Figure 1 (spheres, rainbow, N blue to C red):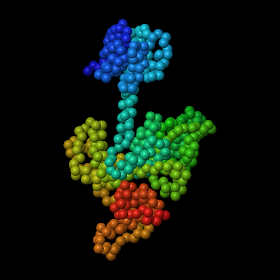
Figure 2: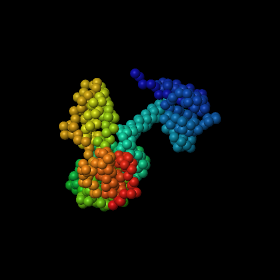
Figure 3: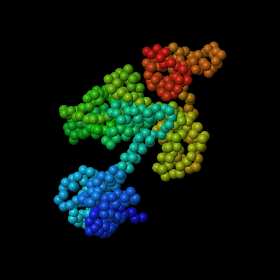
Amino acid sequence: MPATPARVLVCDDDRSVRAALSVNLAKGGYDVVVVERALDALERLRAEPFDLVITDVKMPGMSGLELLGEVKTHWPDVHVIVMTGYGNAPDAVRAMQAGAATYLQKPIERDELLLVIERTLANRALHREVQRLRREVDQRYGLEGIVGASPAMQEVYEQVGAVADSSTLVLIHGETGTGKELIAHAIHYRSPRKHNPLVVVNCGALPESLLESELFGHEKGAFTGALRTHQGKFEQADGGTLFLDEIGEVPASVQVRLLRVLEGGSFTRVGGERPVKVDVRVVAATNRDLRAEVKAGSFRADLFYRLNVFPLHLPPLRERVDDIQPLAEHFLKKFAERHRKPLPRLAPIAVDELRQYRWPGNVRELEHLMERTLLLSGGGEIRAIRLPEDGSPPEPHSEPAASSMPGTGAPALADIDAAGLPGLLDRVERQLIVAALEEEGGVQARAARRLGISRSNLNYRIQRLGIALQDIRFR
């Protein structure tokens, strides 16, 4: 089908100008509407869509500059070309300051007119494409693009919403495959920095000799092979966000430099002497227990506390079982579109299989499994899932043994009283929760991790068991 011609609205009080523009634009392949007054132009804009407005500046009643202001207020996607008298530079300057795409000086040559219109419409198309891509990125990497409505994920969304608008350092904790990078993207694209770079560094994928140069850059001749000056990731992320994945893998020598730039906002390139100042928001992620690493002496305590300004814990998939089915269906749809295959339906028996599996690889493992399942399916209904042999059938997720918590012991049959087994289980559960809270100084997030449950789950259990936090002796 031939492309629909662009619609151009011409506004000029001079009949001869209107006639000339109407003829020339029609010959150029445009759909043209001409009006005499600015108020008439506004009526036409309210009634039908236009791609471009061409208006004279000086007209009786509402001027062309006033019309320009109305168009930019109510139809910001419509570009405006302003026509000015020959040598009337002040009008042209005011028009550009008010948002005109460009201006033309009368008398206007036909070829110049068509060239300016072509360029203006091309810029409009480019602007619309940029806006579309930004919306697509926001949908893909914003919270709207993250699948999961479980209480555990709702808590994550609340924390992302609370911290995104700031420049606070964020440290994301979570097992491999839980979606730490996706959350880092969401933080960036919900922040005021979203139109600036998001730079990602996998700290565990680079040897120590390269990591320092990748982060801070190097000067020409700093080492063998340094044939030119290289900007590091901190410079590349200036004004935006730097995501340091697997921060626990950073070697001690680089930890020192990392701490300095986080505290002072400046650094020197490898082999350089001049400090480089940057404005970078850092989001880091780890699947390690950095507190344990600090105690073991493999991670600097001062760097840990500098990074841990806003800790954000991502729950493993086994703690958000209600999200498994929507995630699986989301991945099936994604790969059905990618591989141009019919979208199958998950039968309840298949959903049950997925819900029972332990998911050691978390969401990433589920994603890969759904792609494989789709490719093996012939469409229709999926009734069986080929789960990995090392994880099925899964053992139920167990609480930490009572002996691992101070003040608790394994119950014996003699401990069962008139309340029966449920009463005994509640008492043991209460002891475990109280002991974990005491050990972790009352910090519920850490106590929840120690118990192997989500913070929202811990909150629910505290309320169900009637545990009064003010009565606990925190250590």
